[in-house]
Length: 111
Image (cartoon, rainbow, N blue to C red; front, side, top):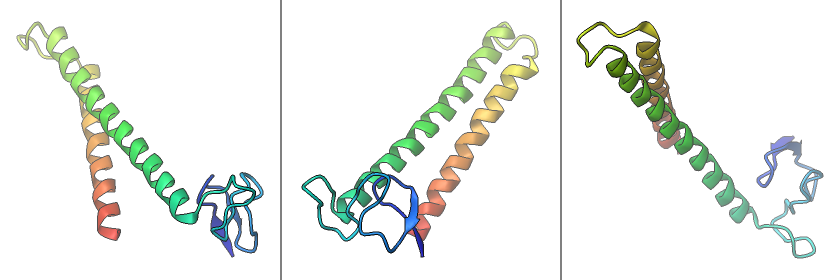
């Protein structure tokens, strides 16, 4: 059976005792003192995934706010209609934000 290494994320056979890519001890025992337990590797993977999602969330907010600021500045304080590019930037950032939040909700529900 093919599994994902808890340490490096590479796809490997479940028959391996250590990952051939990162030398992670898959049986939970540290090999020569440099392996991580399965719980610790899983915790690290979750932390990395959470940090990646948060970075995308903040970037989407930044893009949406930048689009609003650009639309406001380019329309002379909203006295003229703003251009399509700043509004598209805002819409893209807002849509990206909503998609990420939906992804987070689905992950939370699934456990």
